[in-house]
Length: 109
Image 1 (cartoon, rainbow, N blue to C red):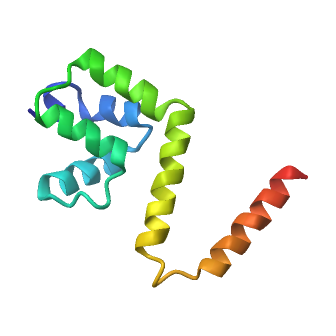
Image 2 (image 1 turned 180 degrees about the vertical axis):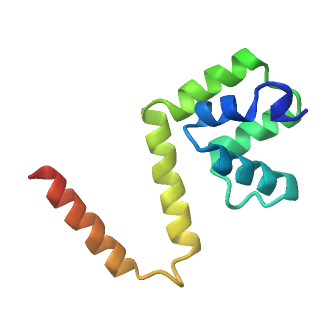
């Protein structure tokens, strides 16, 4: 089963808090088997839909839990960590750390 058999792309984009072009890219990557660039909660959701283990009500509940709450922030932190680890050989980690520290300091003023 495909996600578009449950909801429209526009509806799905709203549930994920993503733009439609981003959703199209995610679905394209998923269709090509390029799973590495897809955030884990979205990947799990698409797998459940493909395996026909997801109803429309279940889809809405899953999205509410994973993309509209503190759990979504935890997932983003995991995705950022994964991205940093996978690309540490090409990233300037000291510069990224300095940027984060500066942002934290600026926000706490």
